[in-house]
Length: 318
Image (cartoon, rainbow, N blue to C red):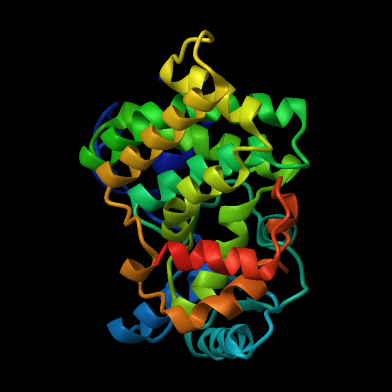
């Protein structure tokens, strides 16, 4: 029987299992791609495991997320990554060299090769991060109609699926829906930008080593409350899309339902509700607030915030 392209790629890289629909398989990876928000954790794990050199045909580390903050932490991460790349035999792409995906495709992409990236989060935090991206790109001050439509479709897929994907890792339909939603979230944010949650999350990672997806998920309900007055109609529309809220209900009540349901979803998949639970300390808040307002994602937030106002909001989350 003839094979399609996907089947040929799987067959040529099959390391375990059988090529049968619904069966579990293991694939050999030719390349790996890590970026600075997750690569530090990967390199630390390599050290802990006592791995001498990478065993792939090619591995590349890109610095394209946390390029520059106002203190030494990002620069120290970059130095660590560069030294780790020398030690483990990994290509190092310095800050300013370009975004990982197009650069890797241009320099190292080879038809028929397999590639895996570093996973920065658990299914729960990663899935909630995708949901956060979809919502923030939908209400961003730079939002556009076509990305908003993509975001709405992504939310329709992801919100009903994430709990099942977390609670039953073998659920292929749930994981397929989450994967599709994650793809749509990337397309939406690339064209419309993000907002509050994604503005604060990278700074939490820098100062407090909070995983990016976890930070976004934790911040999502607060992001909605911060922007509800300016984006009442859009949020009410999402509530009706996701939870069937009647148009006879007031927009405010529809937004209340949306926030309450998403808070419940976060609880169900194990996302903490307080910053203190992920190690954030009161004395860190002023710097976190100040640096968050400098991020490119925060520039898409519908409501402009002053440093002291953002600091009060974050203090309220402790």
